[in-house]
Image (cartoon, rainbow, N blue to C red):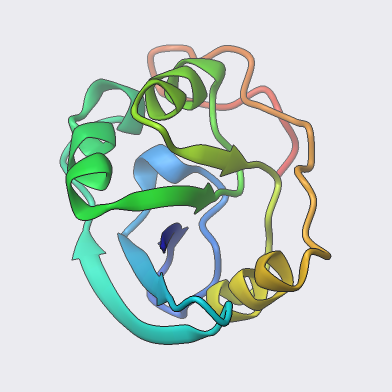
Length: 124
């Protein structure tokens, strides 16, 4: 299994998946352990308008741990077989470990609307 996490340069989860610096891709073995990590550049533009869902699906990604993310992006990722957990924060690897341990839960908040500057309606 593979897990994608939108991150900033310091390996902290980005507050908005569509504007992250890059994605950290974690490969997980059958024992629920991280076996490798790779950085993947984020495509240009807002995440919901990019081809990131198709790229994730081709790479075998099944889960994305996100900070802020809109409903449109969640629906697009879901249509490609990718589960999204929202409102994740902190170090990407630590959040993946919590997910694997079953202690990380979906935060339940999404970006409801975007204006032309792509400002989210949720608190950062």
